[in-house]
Image (cartoon, rainbow, N blue to C red; front, top):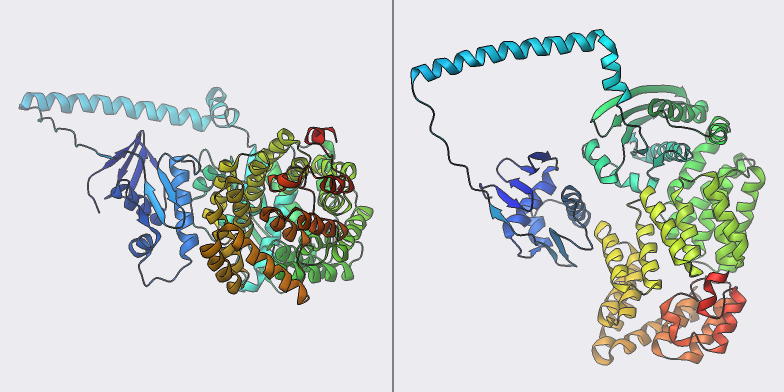
Length: 630
């Protein structure tokens, strides 16, 4: 390790002291990100492989999640340096290989030491001057202390109260599970989610959504640094302890700008009082930050319905599994939501959750069998409570994706946002809906709101990548997907979107590599090998044909395969008639065809009368110029 200080732009790095400064102000960085930053800076533009990073930062024999460990360290370095992953000034990613530090680096020269003044007289003069200055300083400090203690002239109030900046944004970090039982994680996560949902109903407060908050689960990063990364004024953290029929919640509130604690409290209740306990914690936070409530918001927060312990417990477990967003998780979610409904048929949130789980399962099963169940559950939730924003979003999704009821879907999305403007998922759903109609400027505004509320949500990042793809900005689409994959290299949706963007950009080899990765991830290594071999001998179209053959074999074996995928592959191969035939089957099966008017992958068949007939059936305009007319 170099002992000299290193400078790049207006930053100064001291490897020996493990210190990063900017303009004389120290920037806090955890040990592992700091070690990685020092390694990258000292390499001065050379590529540092991921293997070398693991070896030098963690050690060859240290077992950990290497991908996430490195990605998190790089993310924290970029946050400390205010670096942009799309247009980096400091840390550049070589996808799949490693990183390099691209800013110019120079050694900091030590200033020359001036000779000390000589002479006894001079020393006596300095000592005398120092005594006089010290006396004056002590007197000034004493006067200031007396003024503040006695609040003379109201100075203390003006300094510490009236000048305090209002708290307009907040994050509730995942509450620690201190029950000693990892199986209780769902309960701590559920309480966290409930607090976020309550606070998000306050229109004057920006509340970071659950997805981004959960990114810090188990993190020991300083709260002030987390606040900086999420651009919030305040942070709530705490813990949950559940034992038998008792639950204890410990919570504290930190003001990020001043790095000081504003409030802390411990709540101890019987499990039967869990709903009122959550409400009490949320109310305490609202009072402490002096958030402004509209009369309607105050009414909604104060009329939270009580529910028995077993029902709520099943609901929390359903929510926990739904948010895994995979087939196994959605099936477990359905079971728990149904259990909650069995215990209390009048509990509206359980029906809304069930609807969400069903419409996620529609990607793994025939939509005709699943989506009517999703619609019935959402409608039942609204029958029980028409002020439940999550239920309006769920019904909007069904009306859009399955019913192709465009006006009805928009009405539900807008109502959900009106009821809870801080619900990121509603803004994200509405943005996707607007994109499918070509209302791109409106969609981008909704995406921006959603990103402010949920900056680390992988699904949202992928949706924004698709937005860029729809408007023809393929470079930005690729950059967004790469950003998602830096956060989670195993995020399948980003790999899929990246494959489409590469194909649109004419980067066919990279597109096939992403499809091969998806095949391996799905446990279909034979498909990946077949595509690799086909590409080596026949190029892009040969690789696609091998994938198409795989679809046919799976369907022949009785597996569910979306006709949409088959139609798109035929389109890419240039088989127009077969593509249109598959699209007609997809239409008959009520698959998600809402992107037909804007997805550039359909451009080669867009002018065909049969394609335009499908557009009319789905409810989309035939001409691109008519997109904005709906």
